[in-house]
Picture 1 (cartoon, helix red, strand yellow):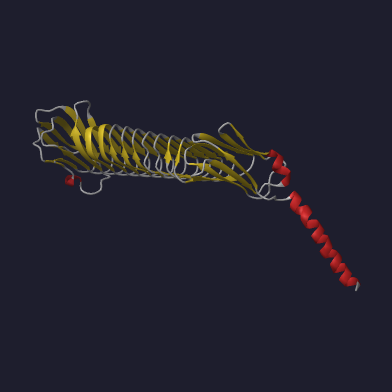
Picture 2 (picture 1 turned 180 degrees about the horizontal axis):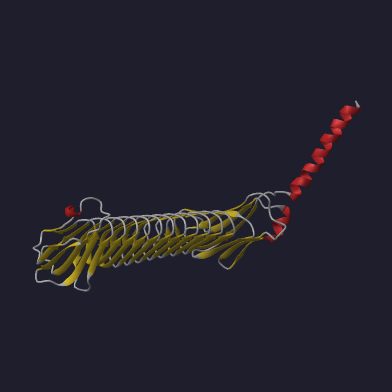
Length: 382
């Protein structure tokens, strides 16, 4: 009987302690709701704690906020309030009083609303098309948003950035992940220190920079700058000048107007449908160029270890200086390397150390310099 009473006493103690543990532990979710007008603002600022922010777009003219996982002793640091047509969600977990469980905010907003979301260490997600400015930042998670009719600024120090179509300018930055965005009607700036960059059609200028991945963009309506230290660059039609540089991959541009500068230390260069002039240089690959030359400037193509193919209109007015440097550390017999052309050469000479040719086409014009080491040169009509 004493043993039974002991068990009953233990069970009673557990039942008594459970409400106390719950009171100082995780609390029932905190929820607030506010009536708002179109074009209002949502400002979320989560500090000193990792917290996910999940925003969903709905048809109601109302903002609803639910906070999950906040402990009782952290509730005084939570503020959910409205001022004018702006809803604030503020949470600062003071040092030494941080929530020990996952904290998450679920928020619903109207389809015409501005978002400014910041968190110290979680994911940010916006589901549903929205009209307004969208600003999102996190120090340690992914950011993912759907279509936006307005300006977009997203930044993370430790994750991927993904966005749908943007009707406006977009600035996307991450220090440790990939960037993917659909069509952008305005300017696009995409920068990452550790991933790929992929974009659809960009209406205006493009700046894409990564230290560790590929860069792909389907079309650019203005100028394009694409730089990577460790991947390929592939650009569709660019309606302006191009600067494409990589230290470890191929460069391909499918159409451009103006100056095209393409450089790589370890890959091939393919430039198609270029109207203007080019500067193409690689230390370890082939060069292929389709050029409708402009009299604005001279062009140059140089490789230290590959072949060069240049295609020109039959009525092009240019002067071509072509040279093959012959070295003993060749890919084969040095006598195999030569300059071939559909145009008549003014000069074509071979010596022990090099092969030279000069072409004055349709009376001549701006100079195109072509040079390779232990490779072939082809100059063709198209």
